[in-house]
Length: 81
Image (spheres, one colour):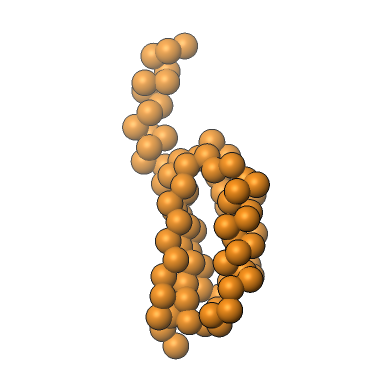
């Protein structure tokens, strides 16, 4: 069954106490998990979310760490040292 709803979260270096509250609220909502998907886009957080957040509770989850921002910023950061 294809999900009817997509919850998309785009974030960069989130405050984990807030991010955990968001995920806990999503876990506690009443729409069956099979009817919605969760998409998390980690926009080059210093500590990738995939290393801190367990998303195994949802059967339709996608998590993407966007390294393009890191690749873009690295030459600039190197110039500062």
